[in-house]
Amino acid sequence: MRAWSGPVDGGIAVLGAGLSGLSLAAHLAAVPARPGPVVLVDDGARDIRDAGWAFWSRRSGLLDAAVSARFARIRVHAGGRARTLGLGRYRYGVVRGADLASVVGEVTDRVDDIGLRTGRVTQVHDGARPRVALSDGTELHPEWVFDGRGPDADDRGTSPDAWLDFRGWRIRTEAPLFDPDVPTLFDFRTDQRRAASFVYVLPTDTRHALVEHTSFAHPDGGPVGTAAHDEALREYLAAVLGADEDTYVVEADESARLPLASRPPARRSGNIVRIGAAGGMLKGSSGYAYQRIQCDSAAIAQSLARHGHPFDVRPAPSRFARYDQGLLRAVVERPAVLERAFAGLFDRSSAEPILRFLDEESTWRDEAALFASLPAAPLLRAMAGR
Ligand SMILES: Cc1cc2nc3c(=O)[nH]c(=O)nc-3n(C[C@H](O)[C@H](O)[C@H](O)COP(=O)(O)OP(=O)(O)OC[C@H]3O[C@@H](n4cnc5c(N)ncnc54)[C@H](O)[C@@H]3O)c2cc1C
Image (tube, rainbow, N blue to C red):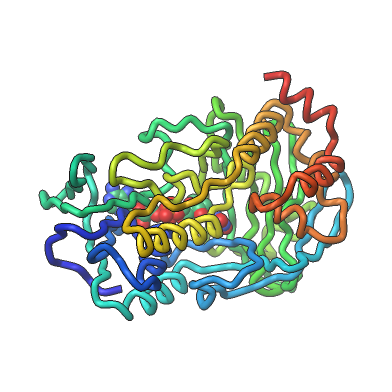
C-alpha cells in the first residue's frame, strides 16, 4: 500500500492496519465511490506478516487470492470417537498475513487516494467532526473514523462471557506425522478438569503444522499461562500423535487470550465506528473473526458508496447472541459440557449445518435439528447454575 504523508481533512481514517483495517481498505477500494481519501494509521507494533487466519466460507470473496490452502474435510475427536466430516459447500481456508497484505496492496493501489501512515493513535475525539491525535503531535480531521485497533477488551469497558485462551506451536517433524488434507478442528484428548479445552491441528504438509491448545476460560479467572499450555501441547504430541520431544522442532509460537462476548459492543459513537475485534466481530462461541470481518467490510463499503454513510449493515438476529451466551455460560461453569455438546453436534457426515449455524445463517428449523443432537440436560443445568 502507498505511504500517506499529507494532512487528513475529510474522508476516512482507518485506525489499525491489521486484519479489519486492511480488509476495509480493500473493500473501500473496490466500490465505485468513497467519501474522500482513505488513510490507514498503524503503529507498526504488530508485524502482519507473522499473523495468519483460518476461516470457512461457501462464497467467493474479494481477497481470495490471499488464501494459501483450502480443505474440504475436517476432523473432530470428541466423546472417545474420531470423525472426519465433509464440509458440503463450505471450504476451510487459510490466509497468511504476508499474503493478505500483498493482495490488499494490489487492490488499493488501483485507486490513488488510499494510503498508509505510520503513527500511534493516542486519542480519538468525537464531535461534529472526529479528531484523531497521534503520538507525534499531529491531528487528523476525517469525516469518518473506523477504529480497528484490535481485540483489547480491557481499555474499552467490554466484559467478556469467557476468554478464549490459546497457545500454538508451529512444528516441524523429522518423519511424516500430519495428514496434509484434513485439519483437526477439535480434539478433546487433553485435560478438561481446569477448563473446557481442545487441541487444533492445522497442517501445512506431512511434516509441518500449527498445533494449538485452546481453553474456554472463566471470565473471572486468570490466564491459563504459557507453562500449562506448553505442558498440554507436549502431552498431546507424545500421547496422541506419538511424537516424542526429540522428534520435532518448535519453529515459532503464538499465544492469545481473546475476549468472547455474546452481546455485541456499542459500535458507533457519532462518526466513529469500531471494526474488527473491537467492533464485536469475534464470534462469541468460536472466537473466529476472519469471515465476519470480510462481510462487515463489504457491507460498510457498500453502504458508504450507496448512501454516503456506513450504517446500512444488517445485524444478526438477536437469538444468535442468546445461543452464544448459553453455550459460554454452560462451558465456563461445567467444562465437561463442551466435549459432550460437540460429540453430539459433530455426530453427522457433513459439518455444513454446523457452519451455517455458526455463520448465523441457519433457520429456526435448522437450529431445532442441531439442538436435538445436543445433551440438553447438562447444558440446561449448567446454564441454570449461574
Ligand atoms: C494469535 C491469534 C490467532 C488468531 N487466529 C484466528 C483464526 O485463525 N481465524 C479467525 O477467524 N480469527 C483468528 N483470530 C482472531 C481475530 O481474527 C484476530 O484477532 C484479528 O487479527 C482481529 O483483527 P483486528 O483488525 O480487529 O485486529 P488486529 O489484526 O490485531 O489489528 C490491530 C492493528 O492495530 C494496530 N494498533 C493497535 N493499537 C494502535 C494504536 N494505538 N495506534 C495505531 N495502531 C494501533 C496494531 O499494531 C495492529 O496492526 C486470531 C487472533 C489471534 C490473536
